[in-house]
Length: 367
Ligand SMILES: *Cc1c(COP(=O)(O)O)cnc(C)c1O
Image 1: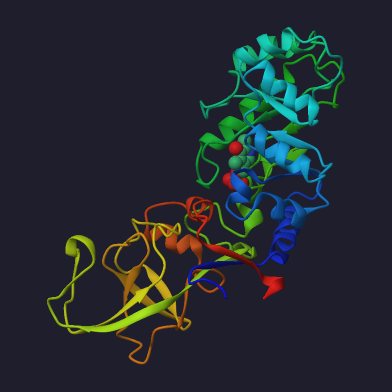
Image 2 (image 1 turned 90 degrees about the vertical axis):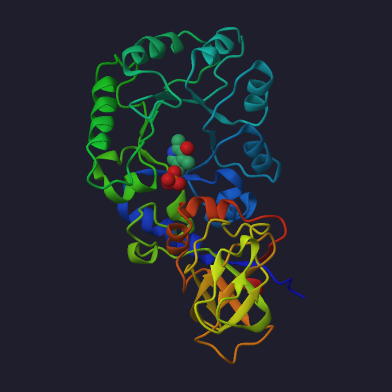
């Protein structure tokens, strides 16, 4: 029996979305970003669904080790790199590629005697001000890395865009130009051998000049738009995840009755109330506002009252015949997760990443 709250994953959609990446970046290699448990969809499941692929990227070394332990041989880049010798040992043992972004990492690398063991991406901070070396320091770091025996040459070069989802923004061209200009000033040991990477999903979709040797799509692989003013569907992407539950109670309330914790909703008229078995304990966003759409029997009804841990309440005025047991969709193909994110003042990334253990995962092919 499927529990009340469950997520259906349409695994075939992953391949479709990957094709879309290839359309936008036909000459680039693809590093599929599957960090944070494959954006909540399951690390190993998504890795399997996307194979064959040029490379995977994860955030942390433990995610890379998990992939290796299931026998995945594809190159894997760990975007946060390592901080100490112990962690670096795991990179060597499991053949993981590291992002080098800090002087602290250089000190670790300088002490290692192993020869030609570690492939790296040297990260430039072109304005995100998170990880990476400033353009003014980049050349010196690049040259230092030529002398560390553990590093496999040639070194790959990358940066990350801070605001690529703002399609008219001036920061993105500035970042791209700074990256290109700085790299052109390096005396590259083997010209044209150093691979470059700039674009995340928004870069791939909106900034052709960000498409270089490698692209790093994340959210678009899951069928979700990186832009606030588009759904994945409008970009010809297919959502992998849909979130479902069911009605567990229907009751009549009178004008003036208050609904839920703190009584934030007062019925403006007599109301048919539906109670649905989903809440923030499942990953449904607690800050979803009154009016957030929910599909009951495939029809939109508005959320009313506060989201609680296990339940939400909706106004069933448009569906007088709805009854306990009826199917509910919280997001998916017919109700864009992007729309729900807007209603909850968040981004769709947090919604799919935030699905909790209680939600049963059902793969569509198994239905
Ligand atoms: C998460 C991440 C990506 C993927 O970003 P999306 O917006 O999901 O496409 C790419 N590059 C880096 C460095 C990241 O951290």
